[in-house]
Image 1 (cartoon, rainbow, N blue to C red):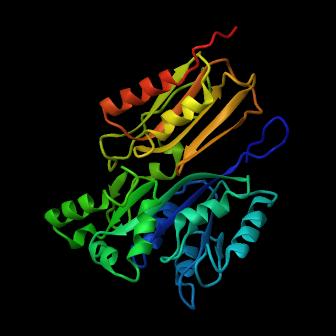
Image 2: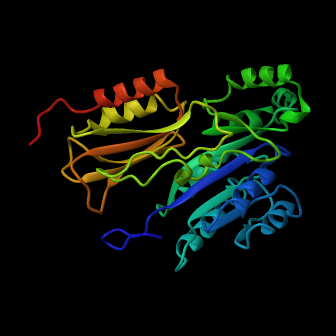
Image 3: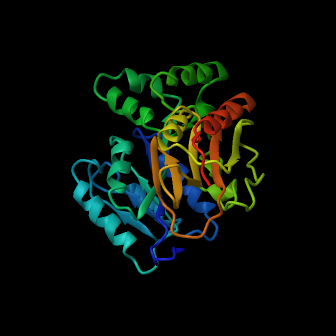
Length: 323
């Protein structure tokens, strides 16, 4: 892990993988682990059953799997989750990445909230698996429909699984039906558990955010939709904090993540900006930075949406004069 000038560690990226029972979360996670390269990934698994089968399946891919007790991770074992997260972040050599596979009946947003109680973590996203072959029936179920709907509503990206079990017409119908509960415009189809790793790993798509340095890299998975992209906003003007937050909230449905180094009109120091899961975090930057503000945005944007976002960020700069 890298450290700032004060010796503080860089926060560990955190992704929560959710989805109703049988949606294919473990298969998706094993795809990530199989293509992790040199990244050191720790996985927390909370299966809903007397025996945690998911942990055993994932352990085949990585030795760093922590099995949480049976039940809903955000309710009955919230305390154990907090203790486990603290233990991981306090390791002498903490992981490069933490993934929490939520049980099929838990709320991934609540899990993310618990995870972020420890400032050692930074949310990268809430990925929810949706079984296209049976999600309609699940949502209509009077007992479990609300749980599945809550999971979908909290997603920063949705992965459509088991699409081979339905025809194109049915798939189109299901996707249209998801538009109502979903708050994200990022829905990607999986094939045998495979999906674009850009949903997890920024370095598959973008370079390091350094003012004056290189911008987004054009490294792309062939399975990504045409409008999935990374683009950069740069300005020498300072941002109005409230206007910047408003601008970023207005693109949240298409935005997977945003990160950058920015200058604000109410502060002299450069600040870090991180946006994921509807959360906008602005904190002082401890390293060296140029006077230019730089923001990298990752998500699904056609040319019109991209320009509208750039215009909104431009409008979020302060009109006051600064020396």
